Image (tube, rainbow, N blue to C red; front, side, top):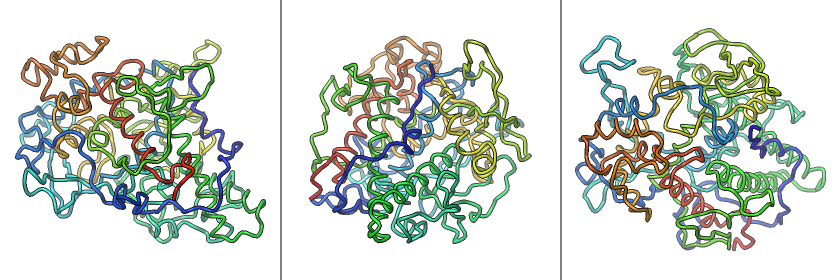
Length: 555
């Protein structure tokens, strides 16, 4: 039976834990969350380096100048069938909740100013280069960084996280106070809405033109006005229909909570209602993310028969216990470079080619309005009482940046949520489906991109060291033979080909972190390295947040 990651489906029938309404709120910019280190977790602060920087010049030049072309690595390591469903019945809801969670805690996508290019040469035999041109390159913009860094080996370049690493409601309320105020109705604690009927409502239109991410849809390469979007908190909510759907659920949930509080406390003013609803929404989100989503993502099983997860059950660095004991001002919640550029991108292997619905539409390169494609049981193993059936669904590659066609019209929010629950994620393996490996959206000058190649190039941009150096930095043993990367012997052919590509070295020291960590994957999920990095990051976010919902003393 397909796993029902049901946190969202329970939102309208479950209420948040009871918490006092005399409180200090999560600061929008993260400053003074930590009273001892006020800048920890603030916007525009450095990514952490838990392994040594490995820039080619020791200062700022990208790592891995002698390493193979990312396109070639992607073709060898990440290509394969779109038709393999999850071996552990993970579903699409888990995948796209994970994408939304990423955008809740980190944003390193904006390039620096002036823009620095670190373009990726396109091989002559590549799909993107049918004419075999000599000097064709896919544009790649280096990440924005602190310009006070990058002057010496003692002060290497440090990239910036433009939002807070806390689960503090950025995806619902925006990355700053200005956005929060722009999406508020300032009446009864509500967010601006199109309807008083919460179950049918959407945020108001972006008539004030908030600067949301707005690339051209790769379906027709047309730049559309940002005013067509709706006032969601997350600036990237409109990337695909599944993100928009989840953003709509959280938007409706806030207004539901505010309305319920208004009925119970008719004397409260707008500000009191808004802050109380905001606190409950954030607490509910933290609980779902930490205790429902993360165990499912990492395939961590509870040790008791009670069907709930507790951090005490999390195996971590040799089986240590991680019971929540309260906030610690000595724990830095910052996002690590290893998490941002590699480990959390494990989720890319779970991204399905689409999500099942009841409608019929079309393919990746059709420029017409339809954005759906036919799926069968072969694509994701969908069965009904053991009888194979045909279903249809929204195809990811043809629905970037045109969410209004599917979310607000047909099939609609309810049908998409239902589809995400019943669509299995892609297999836990080394493969990225073609919708993101060959057909990811891009700018006008390169409208389809390879996410596998981009991931590798981002790691080099951030100066990440090789695979073994990161393992050692996280307290894990070195891997001295390529053949030992995967403890269960999976992907042996791929590993053999990569070994040859990287020069037949005896140990995978120069192997880029993203393919190295991904090749540790088993049917259970992330391998040892990525699991350690991911769990370390989420524990630090929890322990280092003074406003974490379980912390009873925020003073």
